[in-house]
Image (cartoon, rainbow, N blue to C red; front, top):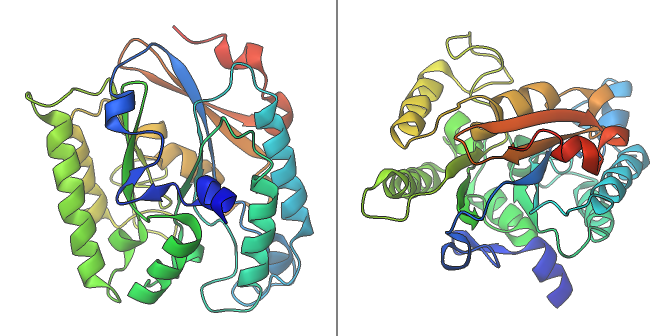
Length: 298
C-alpha cells in the first residue's frame, strides 16, 4: 500500500508530496516535462461497437499504448521533471461495470514509470462523471489523489484544476465553491508583489478553455464561453503570458481529447525557458528523444 500511495496519492491537502513551494520555489533554469492525456482504458472497443457510454469491456489496446508511453518516457535523458496525465484515465464512468478493472490495469502499467519521474493526475469527465457528485469526486480522490491542487517545480507554479466543476457542478455546488475560493487564493498569490514570484504559472485541466479561438461557439470539447472568458481574464490578471498550449491546456487537450486514432499515441513535451515563453511540441511516441527535446531550449 505504501508504494501505491507514493505513486498515485501524492496529491493531498491541495499540494503534491515532494514538489512543495519551500523546496521548489527558486528558478533553477530551463527544464521540461511530459504532458499526456486520455489513456482512457476501454474507449477503443466502445467506439468500435458504437456504444461509447456503456461499452468498453476490453482495453488491452490501451494498455499496450500506455506501456509504450511509459517505456518512451523512461528512456528520456535528462529525465523530465514530471509527467502529467490530463484526465480520462479510464473510460468507464463511476459506478459502472469495468471501472475497477480498468483502474487496476492502468495503475499496473504506470507503476513501471521510473520512480524519479513524479506522476501528476488530472481528473476528466470519465473519471468523475459528466455531472460529478460528492460521492464520485471522493471515489476519484481515493484512487488518484486530490482533484485540484498546486505544486512547484524549479520556480514554476503549477495549478491542477477540476474542469468538470466549471462545466457542470449542479450535483456538487459546494465543491465548485471550494475550488473557486482556492483558485482565487492561488492566483492572488501568483500576482502578489509580496509573495515569491513564479517564473511561469501553468494550469492543467481536462476540458480545454477553447479549441481554436477564445470566442468560438460552445461544444462538447470546450468550456462554455461565459466560463472561459472569465477564466481567461483571471489567468491574465495573474500574469500568465500564453493562454494556449500548456498554460491553459487548450491547445494540448484540443488536439488529444476524443480522438480514438490518437489515443495516447502522442505525448506533449513542454519546454520552459529563461524567457516568458513556454514551448510545446506534440510528438508520436516513437519521436520522443533527447536530441529533439533539447534542441529548442534557450
